[in-house]
Amino acid sequence: MSDALSWMPPETGRDLGWTLIHFLWQGLLLAALLNTLLPICRSPIARHNCAVATLVLMALAPIATFLFLHDFGKGGVAAAGALPLASISAPWMNGLVILWLAGMAALSLRALGGWYLAQSLLRRDTLAVPAELLQRCHDLQRRLAVASPVRFLVSRRTNVPLVIGCLRPVILIPLSAVSGLSPHQLEALILHELAHIRRLDAVTNILLTAVETILFYHPAVWWVSRQVRIEREHCCDDFAVSACGDAGLYVEALTSLEEWKVTSGLLLTAKLAANGGRLKDRVARLLDAPVQSPKVSLSAMTGLALLSLLAVSVALAAPRGKDAAALTPIQETHMLPPYPAESKQLKEEGQVLLEVTIGTDGTVSRSRVVHPSGHQRLDLAAANFVQGYWRWQPATRGGKPVATTTRVSVLFKLKPPPHAKP
View: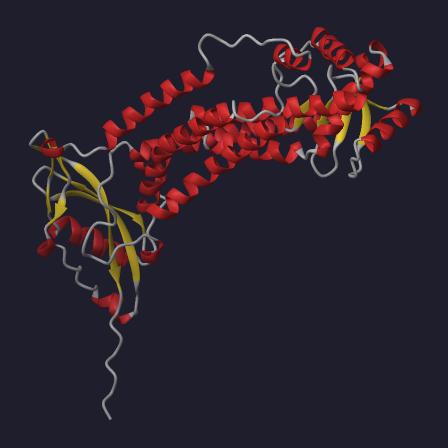
């Protein structure tokens, strides 16, 4: 599994792994802080802003952790021939990084698929908006003071009004809504979509998708992201009700959409739909009706899951005292290999990165070139010398020596000629 990360410097992989582990407690702390702030905030705008700020902090926390852990001053490479490149990390560290990269790649494909599906809605089965309805749409746009140009299209493929696009937003109006809703109900739903554009929610959507893709493994990220989406819909609901002046009319339009919805649960990361969030909770809030809280809250379940993950990570990462000891190099054996004579003549220089397997007796049973120097003679000299002459105090587990693998760097650099004395 370590071969899959051969393109990455070992220190980078190690520090990346620890960054992912540290985010377990960082994400838990930030989610707990948001869970404390949400009940205090009275308006949906305040709750939405708190959730977005938490998500931004979640995005910045791993970056700050990696910058703190990684030693850029040494370029991630230790001095030649003296010590291993990195202290021995846990054997599962490379696997952790590989799984994270695989998950991030899968969710990136999911995001691209959502973007493609959203674009296909614009290209297929769309009609021009009737002149009278288009005029009303422009009037609503002026009423909400939406300055950016907005296109309006009628779509046969969607059952709810939705916004697609960021720089050049398009509002898709379902054909069923044009024929099945009253003009005032349809206007209320269009006001909701215009509110998304006015609030620049498409930009927030990009942030949500990016953070969910990179930090997908943490349940708190998905919980915070859900809070952003819920409060975003509440904000747009308030815009629409304030503009149309009739909460009952708007609720009737929302419930009609729910009845027509055929593709329930379809989520496109590039769209903002009028039926987002939990419709029952949105309707209850608009009508000032009490909302029954779930017996087991999502935040409580998230906290329990995170505590379990945190306990496992601490147990795996913590030193094991007398039960385990890392291998250490025997300094006097770690001398630089003899410089090949032919390489000297040709003035060949370079640095070789080797992956070595240390046996239970401290000798090197295998030496493999991971990153070559660019000169085969130097690579062979380094691999053969390290395997033949370098020694370690073997690592132990439970008091018994165990074989392990690490990486070392060997630098071949010709000494500059001495300056001639006057």
